[in-house]
Image (cartoon, rainbow, N blue to C red; front, side, top):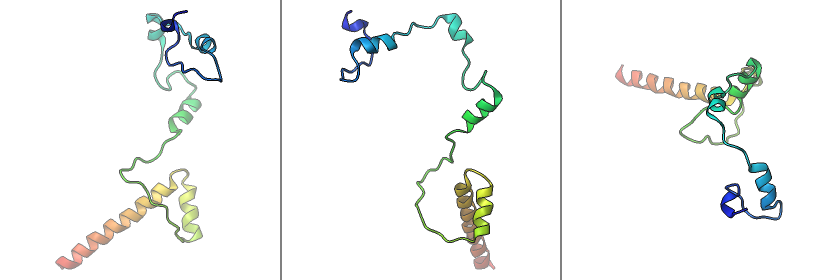
Length: 113
């Protein structure tokens, strides 16, 4: 077998040989009919599985990295946020940010008045 016939991406190492790599990496190209039958994303999956895969790994996109902090809050406040499910830290952060925005609006109103 010529080196150009080997599967692309093989890097010699002690874990497996070129023959091992070729054996598991020798996938034939898909036909036009096979490509036409393919579905993107979660189409064709059972609804429960599609929903689980869709939710997996989701998190709030942020322009800035959060800073870890130790904060004391009332147990019932923490329980209420956690009861909302995953993302409770982001929701708590949004509430704190909204409080800052309200405070800025109030201080502007006081300065005008």
